[in-house]
Length: 306
Image 1: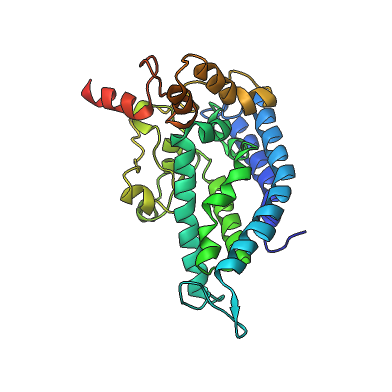
Image 2: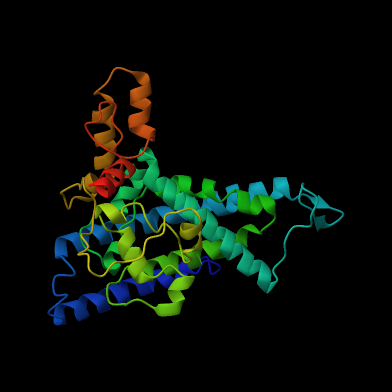
């Protein structure tokens, strides 16, 4: 058991909090339909699959990839690790931990944003958004394929001198924060929302309302969304519709995991032009060579002009 990873302690608690929210929702008349049994079963299946695959990829990422990058870019020089750029590699002071958590969140923002703007990556990430329910069960509804490429978005962190084990802990903290965001029971949090990504902000992220799509990609901070123009505050006068516009319409885990890859393949067959085929796979979701479908940016532009 890896005691350096916060998820070792968090994962068992996830089930407890899901059961607590489920029980509470069934006693709450306004939120009675917060959970649907088949949908919850599909989400839990996704979560269990991720939990089985995660240790395998974590071994490659943390022990092999991150350590390899760290060793190459921070060689030992007279008993001291020196970064190839000329500075001494970072230690374990409290402010280094804070800095690592900050750069982890920066990487998470871009990893998450690319999952929404590159269709081949979206095909893996859409699993998390495929439910039309927003609850703690949805939080564990994770695609199985994202964990194979996610580490590559973080390689630069050990490369600049942060110890690999520190990064692993920060990744775990990020995942714990992300889990608890998936609740409708926490209202707006005042001054906390000036800095942190909160429950209402993440509700926006999971909405399929045109004005909310591709917003709030941050992990535990919202600063990067604000800097890079993807932040959106919840408008309580708008009824949120959760999920995706092209849902799998199935509770079968295999369908949920693979339906977008199937759609990509079908779209690639629409044109013999190899550039078009490439764009169907790697352009933004919704891109089409004939305008038959639109990207989110195109839809939002039309929405603003209407």
